[in-house]
Image 1 (tube, rainbow, N blue to C red):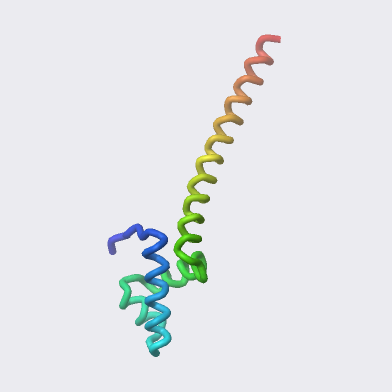
Image 2: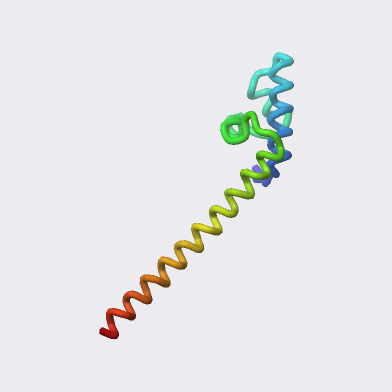
Length: 92
């Protein structure tokens, strides 16, 4: 099966489609198949994006990306500090 990367907007739209099919009497598995996702993906997306509006989902992804960048920056700075401390001990 080919993995696809869906945007937050696409995910929320697919979740809405599944909810419509379920309200029309389809099972979760049938509804998921109709929108070309697995049932497991539906439940994972619903846990992460359930009840969100598109703008909120976009903001969540932006914050996750920024958080990742900041964590990397902190790790780099901690490494630099460690190297400088080690160098300072060698000069004493």
